[in-house]
Amino acid sequence: PIAFSLQTCKTCGYTHYDIEKVPKNIKETKELVKNFIDDLSTDTKTLPMYKRFELVGKILILDRAIPNKIAATFMRAAWTAEDAEKFDLAKTYRKEAARFLAEWLPWRKKALRRKAEELFLLAEIYRRAGEFKLSEEIHDQIVIEDLQPDLQLALIKIRELLANGDKRKLMLEEVLGR
Image (cartoon, rainbow, N blue to C red; front, side, top):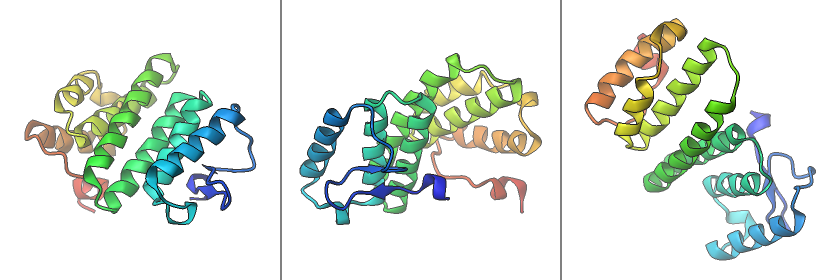
């Protein structure tokens, strides 16, 4: 959990996983943080967690971080937005996460199981965002035998949800009956 926690400077609002690491583009980052905080008309103490993750995602984009790190940050923004019942915002964050994950997949060299798991994740992000056609296209690329057994069971259930246009959250325990 510590690796995913955020730190925020109380003075300027700079937010990151580790605020002691200096961003690559200091001037642009300062401007981005200031504009982000100003646009929200809030102070750094009241910035909701989902907005903090959004800000970190924008800083990572500015720093040209690897796309899967950006995607993971926007997924955390989506989860925390959903927890705050900001469902439209969660959908927006999921679409951003999917965009960066989709950008990352073709360049990554990986074992077949890992590739299948990443495609599974991308398809699930699209389904949760209500992008059913894109989710189906990704599902068609997944070789079920390359997934670990629990994910094979989950994939069957998720395909049922997809066929019904259902974008609700599904926990692995629900599929496995645990």
